[in-house]
Figure 1 (tube, rainbow, N blue to C red):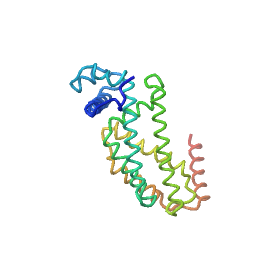
Figure 2: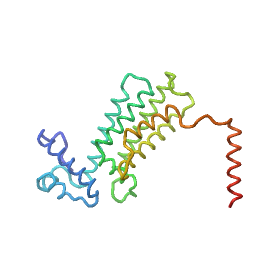
Figure 3: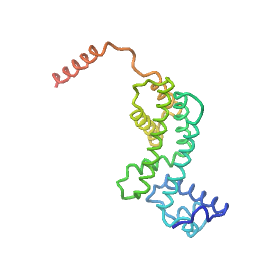
Figure 4: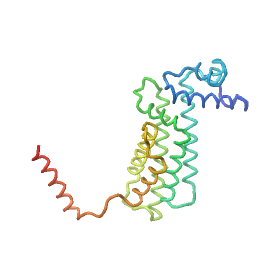
Length: 228
């Protein structure tokens, strides 16, 4: 087992943080599988023995990264939603904070998407569980904001809080994935502003009564079947 924080001096904690930062950079650049303990040591100008003094394996390093970054993520979100403001304002703060955290930990976010696509061969069940726990906490935070809004009258009572929380996380994950992978991203501020506008004002212009609208759609579908 690697060294616990309780047994380290301040200098030792600083060295561990430097090694974690180096590992995060290398995992993002070379990939998790291609990065070695020796690579991490060389990036910090130290020997491989120093890395093994803190961790027994590369997986332990990754587990520490997941834990520390998600703790920072959770603390930042908790601070945002603790503000004495209305629920819609908290959603603005929440989205803003998520985008800020992504911009700060961009390489780590890319690793999380790799982890989520893992079939269980590269990462341990403990690491997968840590990610699931983080998502569960995030959903609970958003659901709590919806509860507040429904109680104070700023969010419609028929909104399904759990469905909304899952949908919002899905959209934010999509934003982050695009920003991580695309050559010509839209920009975080632009994406966040559009998302919040859609949630606040909707997207559709007024359209005919529901029955007339549904009949029109059915007619279009039937025309498509005839053309085939």
